[in-house]
Image (cartoon, rainbow, N blue to C red; front, side, top):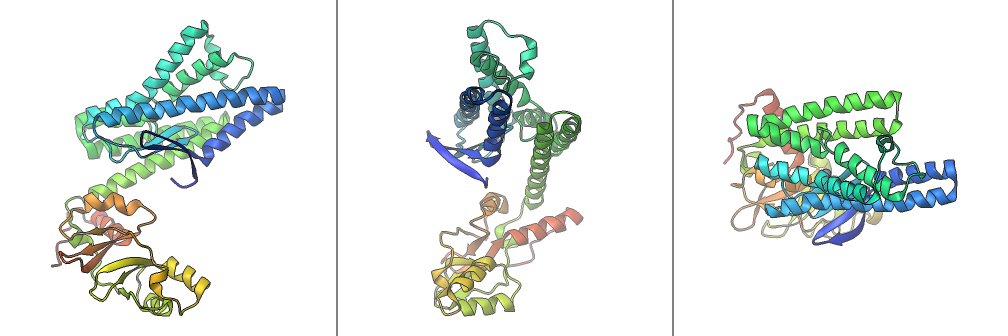
Length: 365
Ligand SMILES: [Zn+2]
């Protein structure tokens, strides 16, 4: 996720903070300062750091549950609404999905109840005052954890409740339809939340926008994956493309840019094997910095993956979501480039399948 800062690593998982989470923390510290002065701001900051720790533990609840099913999570990103563990894949089995989704809120429930028992008493009204510095730290932390457990169970993506809902639906109607229904329910919740935000807490409005976008994104990704199902890379790749020779200058790359409608240009060696990739933006940036006489190979992207034409598109779809790899090389058995798998081409397939769901693409050799 862009706009995130890495703060540490634990057991192969990088912990990142999204800039909006920092703004959220600053908002709480700032409001305490404005109301009560410096000591209250310090108190709130300590509270926030402890709360932050609980959010991290929540995420590790998900991660450790997922690890039981052999799924790794390389990154955890903290957002104002909790956190998002970027799992390498989602559990396909709805029962596993349910366990992984519930493991996070369960952590907060356990912490909350433990602190509650340690603290002794809790008035129900205090649940609504987690930013009130007059309550004891333990009491506020207990309330905050119970709040986190409940809040994360709101049945909307990207909240855990959205996953719980999806898992429960998937057990009855299957994965694809479950995603569609869960995304719709999530968006309805977001609209309701935004409405409440208009008349109450502006933070709710902010969360509502976030939830709506996440639900829309989830539905979009699912629709795309659905449209690409059953296609091979060979059927989806671009076959008419202009490669750039390894010893070409940037001026040559500019010529290719003008002569074609391509956005991505593979750079190939004398045998036609790909050695790098140049995007339209790469060429523009390089020309601005170096002029036209520099070799194109000096500024190309390296480390772009090669895939084989027989591979299912579904299996490589996620690799194309990486902003550093806007395209993948398609190579034959000798490693010679035969096509280019681009986001643009996949978007067009999704478009055609949206007007003709049964369209067959297998027209090329
Ligand atoms: Zn969670």
